[in-house]
Length: 166
Image (cartoon, rainbow, N blue to C red; front, top):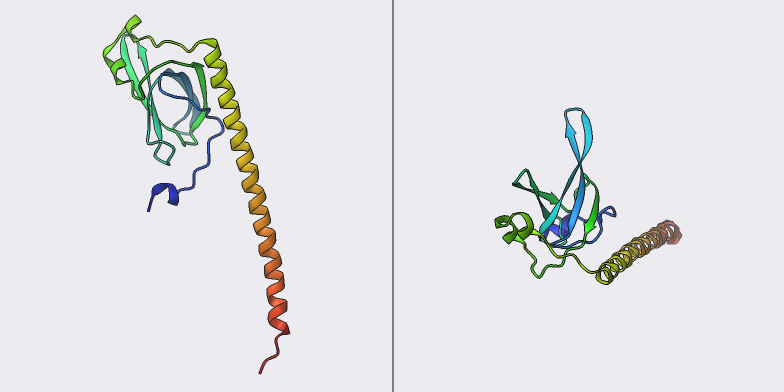
């Protein structure tokens, strides 16, 4: 049995589609004792891991005072308040581990040109519209199934009562 079959995923609508090489700002909810606050972590996505399943996660890397900091975020976590893409990077690899050995200007990632950015934004909007349409269709199908179940339940006792007992 697969974990995706056991745990039904609901797409987090606050997370847009992104890829390795993009610079993102992740607003993550942190609980400190009784208080809860939102902490922003901005950096370059160096990998997406485990696809779209329940264990899917992504790693964000940033440089602070010359020290590289990497943080792994679960993709489907309800603790992710929002994810904003600040730059669309143009890279040829899915895993950018080579950035760990680079510093300064050598660690820069080429940005997509405006036409490519526009296409990426349009694809993102289309994906959001498809998700909304799928959710709407699923809700309609669930409502129809519930209505059909109610009518079947209402007809079943009447049919059982009409049968003569021998």
